[in-house]
Amino acid sequence: MTEPYQLTAWQAAEALQARELSARELTASVLHRISQVEDRIHAYQHVIAEPALALAEDIDARRARGEALHPWAGIPIALKDNLCLRDVPATCSSKMLEKFFPPYDATVVEKLRAAGLIPIGKTNLDEFAMGSSTENSAYGRTCNPWNLDYVPGGSSGGSTAAVSADETILALGSDTGGSIRQPAAFCSVTGLKPTYGRVSRWGLIAFASSLDQIGPITKDARDAAGLLRIIAGQDRRDSTSIDAPVPDYPAELTGEIKGLRIGIPKEYMIAGLNAEVRAAVENAARFFEEQGAICREISLPHTEYAIAAYYMICTAEASSNLARYDGVVFGHRGAGPFDNLIEMYCQSRSEGFGPEVKRRIMLGTYVLSAGYYDAYYRRAQRVRTLIKRDFDQAFTRVDVILCPATPTPPFPAGAKTGDPLEMYLSDVFTAPVNLAGLPGIAIPGGFSAGGLPIGIQFIGPVLSESLILHVSHCFQLGTSHHRMKPRL
Image (cartoon, rainbow, N blue to C red; front, side, top):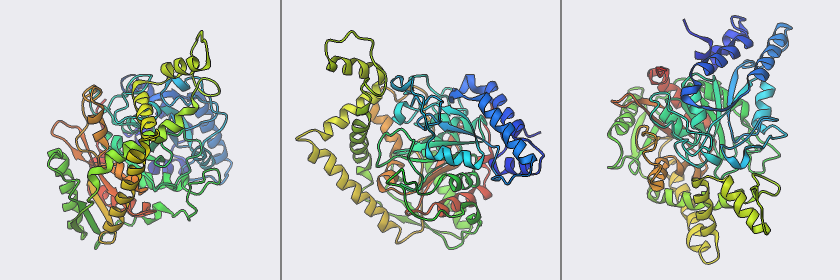
């Protein structure tokens, strides 16, 4: 018998509207699942059970009165702990913000509330979203539900692990260089990074402002389409949000891909690519060709410079954004005593930030410093332009790009913490998408011989979320990878 917590959002919505399931029953089922497995997964920073149940009861009462509600009213959703949820801690998994209770909701949370979705908790992440394994959290690492000795990816590892382990129906994450797509691939769920500006960043605690984007983490592409429909749209409080109509994404999942032109970048299918990951991409290409799509090799010639450019730009922006946490107005303040203001700054920031955040602040400060700005930051921005041009040129020949989401399946916990450069290479296939501001989606593509998830990725032109969701949905209609569940 299927438990309510196992349902997709669309399945749950149908049951709620048919009165076969109440919002309270669904929420209580998810909370029960959390109580069963959370001590092994550690997906959550905060579970807000009583407020969630109260909201669910209110939704049930409104539905019983015959009020017009959004079809997804009453569905639980988890939020990455760098999103502001009023009066609930937003720690960014950092000691620096352990006492921060936002007095407001992020725009995406406002939209979720308006649709009647129920925030059920805040999920663990790499501190300030800086990492690829969710091992950098000040409050302990998250485990991969498929093998607890392995990482779930990062930085949205808590959100992806929660969806994978059925500890929520839906989740939101943020993606700066792959932080939705990489952990989605590692946890065998669907993770969408929208076009830069498609979703408001107001209320997202900033890491790198020209790269950050909020996006859905779900059990399949159809759920991702429905959730994006709710959270997308222009916001006057975010000057970078795009003034463009929001399509009815679920209505555009037609299942037809005959004649679709799919490009596979030769620079992504490199010699060092894990053989099982390569096989997953090749199997996906064969699937699409059997459905009438046209697959061809393309070139993205500046790919090899993407990681270097990304880590110049994102660390520079992190250095600027995190300067506000000085122990005066924002963030942790050291206990002292202090002889002067500089000592207070140094002690507060040394205690409040973890090693990876300090590393990136120092690197970013260096690349912005006098004498080095032109050599590093300005040059990285020029490379960024070249990478965007590569994609623009590719999309004159193909409609969508198919490639790996990650260079390997999930790796064991602790395997890369001693080598930051090796960890950074986990984002080699995802960071270029952020540099170019494009939409990308990672979906389950199979499993390794050891039973670990492997993800594949689709990339589209600006504002082509409908297309990459459609392609993902077609793949999921014809495969069963996304329906497999970890044994916990």
